[in-house]
Image 1 (cartoon, helix red, strand yellow):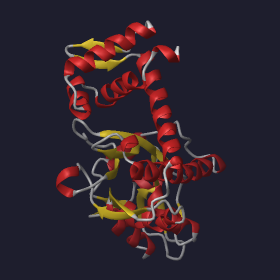
Image 2 (tube, helix red, strand yellow):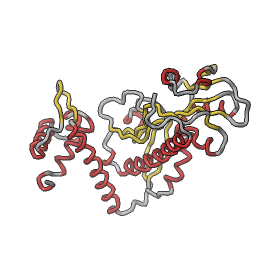
Image 3 (tube, rainbow, N blue to C red):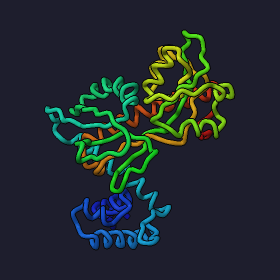
Length: 305
């Protein structure tokens, strides 16, 4: 079968499937739309399957199309890693500009960058703190870490890193205060908590105090001002160092973290290196939350808001 297909044809399919548009794929590949459409038609005829459903001029991946996209992602990543090992090591450091939400950057990403530097990959991370939509060109950002709670816009390449978990924490060194500290950066979180009924009944009776950022909620909890409901990633160190304690096990909130890019990851060695490392680290943290849930008979990973 492999001798009947060209890598170029699969690349055309990958771009269309990733961007959901023949037009965008043609622009990225610097070819005509008709050339892309012809390659897709030839690929479907060669395989004898339908890869896309055409609905009102919109391309929607079929189940077979989803399977082929998954294969392409794995193959292109492995091929890129192989080519990286064949290249002569670059003695010069290359910068990669990464955008990350402020509290996640301060509390989770920055403490781990030392382990990334130990890889000696030749990639130097320049970290910018920001949230929401990313203008990659105007801000000179190479890659961004975001939760999927907003529309990214057309032409953005993305890959899931890990699921989000939230947890209620308070200081073990202060008398419990009947205040619940919430962040205005996630205005829908409280509504999700009250509707889901996954937060403890007692906590639902607490007075709610809304602060500007999760960082302030964490500092408030450390100072004994109340119980903070925050991302589990953001308090991982405080929990490990017994500066904060869980009021109940972490809860999946149905959102997840993704890395975003204006261009396919496999086209840039720096992005591939950082993305692979980031996914490993976030998955490792997430597994700690899951094992914590199992050990405390709390909500499992199928219990979401």
